View: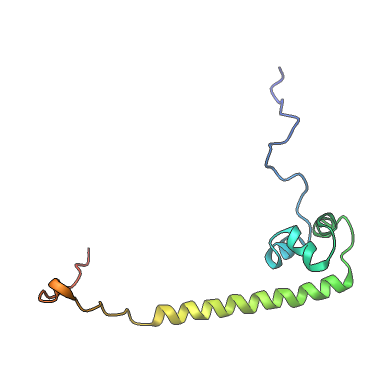
Length: 112
């Protein structure tokens, strides 16, 4: 056996085609080729070809993707603002004790 021998077949889950120019764009907007294919009413293979630069991306699709990416960015900013507002709120006070434990007072939590 030679020292530099390597397997001829690729590992099972390794990507067979390198990512194309629009791969990340489709992944962010749709997540899967199937979702993009349903949106554009085409086949998954056509979407795969667009993602991997095997066929040119139609002008109507590129214009639509620009709007969809902008919409995703707006949603991400809105979620970020809501999280910021949630983290700025003071913590809720504990509920008052009820039943047979109502006569006992709560102690502050220890900081450890």
